[in-house]
Length: 311
Ligand code: CP
Ligand code: NVA
Image (cartoon, rainbow, N blue to C red; front, side):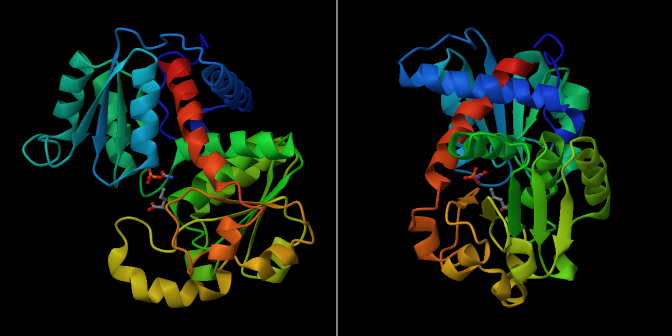
């Protein structure tokens, strides 16, 4: 924890396998403690600014309740209510918030914005989702895989859909670091960002796992331990809805996709919110392989662990 203290959580690239392991172990412990009614006042006397340019249910509620129930004071700041980016620059906003708060959470469009908040505020900044990455989600996802499948190393996670969005990118980095094989199935026009792909391949080589990108559902799904999908139209891309929905139709996760894994114990995951009938059928998300509600709950425990480690 000494090494992590004061760091920002902007992308999983900035964290080693051991550091991610420490945060995951802490998350499991904090979850168990909470079930036993044990709280630690981890954030007593501290305050957290939470800036949202885009809407959120899980991320906002996870940060806000995790910080509050451990004695901290979270303050929700929608961009409609503050000067950020309109009357005041990101840099100046960061400087002011850094004088008043012990940490800042940011959800929005550009990765550059969250990076800039970290550079200029002088306090730890947490990326609650940008167009490029969604790193806190991956901690909840890895935690959920451990709960259901025991271990991470050697498991294979197959993600189907938009291979170029924040979820695909952060899953690639997180899985590659932790020794989880990852296959991205997407049309070539939505294949992952090249830099993220190359970085993930290097990390996978170090952890003895693989990163694979394919357009073929039959080939990609075979042998999956985890089948993962995300919305076809991410926040901010609404004008592309029609094209996306027709392009991604073949990548829907349905009962047949689960059969293609040849693994009756396969678990289905989705960061949520989900559009039933598009990226996943109602049968799958409500079916016995689905662990999406545990995954959603784990946002809270893993975010609590991230904040404990870094603030
Ligand atoms: N998974 C996730 O980030 O959900 P929200 O958009 O509701 O925060
Ligand atoms: N890719 C989705 C993730 C939502 C948690 C989006 O950015 O809208």
